[in-house]
Length: 63
Image (cartoon, rainbow, N blue to C red):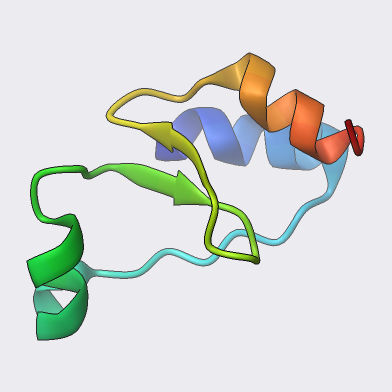
């Protein structure tokens, strides 16, 4: 997922913050079975396990 996001980032210019959940117990407890996970800046899930490109592009286009 990360490689796909970085590729799309060159075209769409969005900020991407990668968090290592093993460094934060509160994240590990919440997300350990759902990674990789992509959330927007409001904490809404856009993708789990695999990149849902349609969901991401819809978000980026403001739909």
